[in-house]
Amino acid sequence: MNIILINPNTTKTMTASMYESVLPFLSKGVNLKALTAPFGVPSIEGYYDEEFAIQPIIEVIIPIADEIDGVVIGCFDDTGVQALRTILDVPVVGICQAAMQAASVVSNQFSVITTLHRSVPAIQKLAAEYGFRDICKRVRASEVPVLDLENNEKHALNLIEKEVDNALKQDLAEAIVLGCAGMSKLSHLLTKKYNVPIIDGVGAAVKLVEGLATL
Image (cartoon, rainbow, N blue to C red; front, side):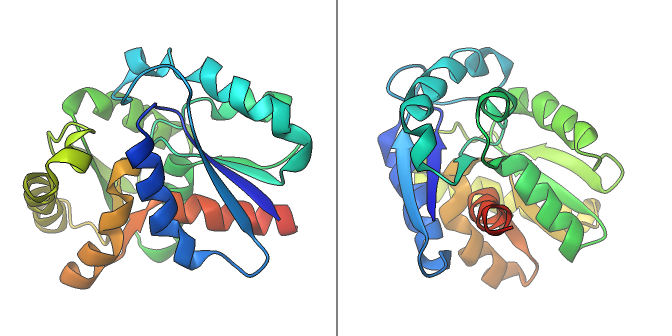
């Protein structure tokens, strides 16, 4: 089985981080190839950035469409998911939908921790579109720029942990969804610290595509 993990932004270190975080979870016989958008924006933080990210991922995927069994979109805005579903006949899953789906299975209610405040409206809209409006208690902005997840990890982690604390105490969240692909490497660490499911959408999406492609 050949699955593509496509990062819609141009930051290759983020692509590598996503790939490394999910690699231990792959089933035997699954080949995961991580690709980065060849042009566009270095990070996607809301509606404006999304507009520059769809064309590059289409141009990357179309030439290899006949060779793949599924696609994971490594951006929490699920950028380009609908466009790729229109032109491909294999499963295409965004990490937001996959993470929220996973959270709905393992909890009665969850909160999302994302990066900047301007990303919140897009995620709230997706939660409503996917049918999770009632159980997604809140989308919280940690005010960590996406690229700081790569360049200023300790400071970013402190801010994210603060919002996890708030979500558990104030929202009564039973699970936390990490609302950025760049947070994927924090899932195991935070789950161990808080003893609640801290869900990374990259891993959730890859496993969902595995299952859908098998079916």
